[in-house]
Length: 141
Length: 291
Image (tube, rainbow over all chains, first blue to last red; front, side, top):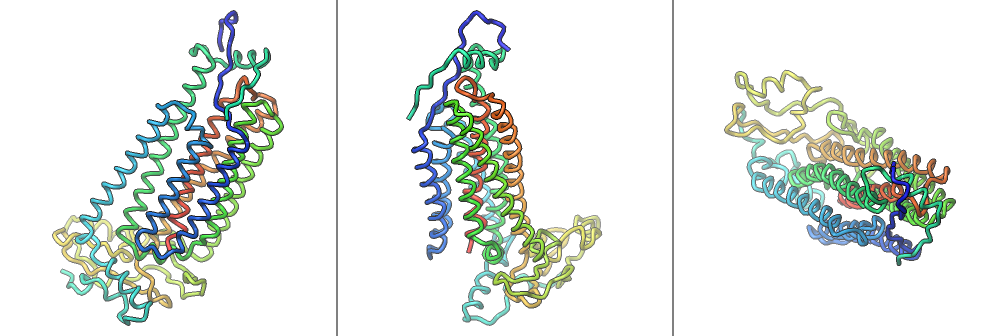
């Protein structure tokens, strides 16, 4: 505890958001969460996960800016968060690039298996998925 | 949107009482605390990023597993949980505001509502976990589903399906020790990840079992449930910790400890709860909206 009782002490100030603003942000976030469910129902192919994650990123940014008061915080706090997200993106991206580069050798079977499952479900192919992996027919040494 | 709050002599005394000796002013102490909290939250995000990375690797390497197993999770349940957490995020942000403005009853009410939201989230999640447990939709060797993704019962797969052709164990190779572990120790037979062709074990035939009664189930579905329980479990642990800490704030707010002169703990816990919300914003589409 402070020992100098002669100096005046001014309490710390932090930014105060209005109730209307907080409720408005909450409505936007709820609408985006519900919107994500509808985006998932669209036939966007591989772009769907990108759209879903883009909505999640927008929600996270809005939540950080207002619910966590980042918009009114110091630039250094913003830099900590931004650098963390940059490094997470780099981390996951490089791992995925590496895994995709090695995939033909490491995981030769399942991508073809998925195609066969989908074809079979669609009624275009009656080959059971067990035969999908070309390595399955290779003799064991 | 900023509001000027009148600070009276009592609040000055409160601020003085909470000023640690190594800080010059309450503002300096508050800013240092905020900075420390952001750094802590950055480490939290990095902790979760490891699991998101594992998720990404498994999803890239086992697309069929995620497409199949994702059908077992109910998107509406995930959405309800998201809305509950967002609402508790709102009540927490309101609690911060009421602490800053000295509205003590409203502060206590909002903290209690935030705790209630966390408990509601956990209750829905517990029901999901229970249903998964009943249907044996679990991780590793515990995965033996009794229902298909369409909800219809399927013949349960008990134990492990033997390999079509076991890799030949080479002398003092890693496979020898793995084989010695038996079926409880290592799920070799469910894996379609082969030993490297140039490795000591030579080429092995990959196992592609079709579960009885469920012929189009891909191999390794247990991977999805492993990552599902790990990610949602770690998140739920954070929710539990958040509820405990908010409970501590609630007790302090009943004692009238927070007001314009001192409200830093409420602000810091509000930031933590924001990250708990944020993680679910990503878990919801990645786990519940796959199909």
